[in-house]
Length: 215
Image 1 (cartoon, rainbow, N blue to C red):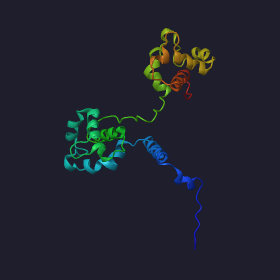
Image 2: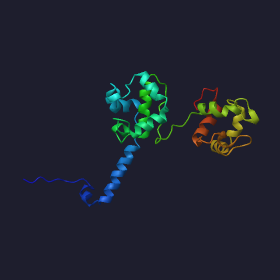
Image 3: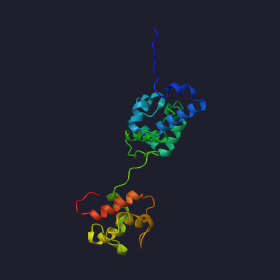
């Protein structure tokens, strides 16, 4: 008896793909994996590093040993991560997993340091776009320098009467004015890394401050 096999669309042509094209497909798959959300330090440690650092195998500093980690922590994250990336003594490069990103290595180190008495901040991703900062955070860190007390004629935070004439021009016009700078206010409020959306968030927050409206 002959069993017929019906190929899905496109599968029948799979054998016609050249070696070069196949290599490109594999590269895309690898790149897509690399762009996936990077794991936390705890996840990396529990899945890999704990096999040696959990018990101190072959002289590896044991997680929780504050004395062992404090001596190493003096090198700072850059020094420790450089060693981990290159490998040291019986620990292979990248902890034995070449697919780990530099950030994941740094996060694993940070987690182990913190579990051993440290207070380091886990590194942010180098590949994922940072989440937009809230209007409140931006205003507190930057805009309040002038808008808190109306320095140089800046409309005060929460002063709707001062903000309304400006908003009547349209939010896009007001944001563009903040991007380019206006009067005594420098471009992007003097903080070059603010995105257009973050500037918009800051303006909305200053207009709504005290009203209970969400910004």
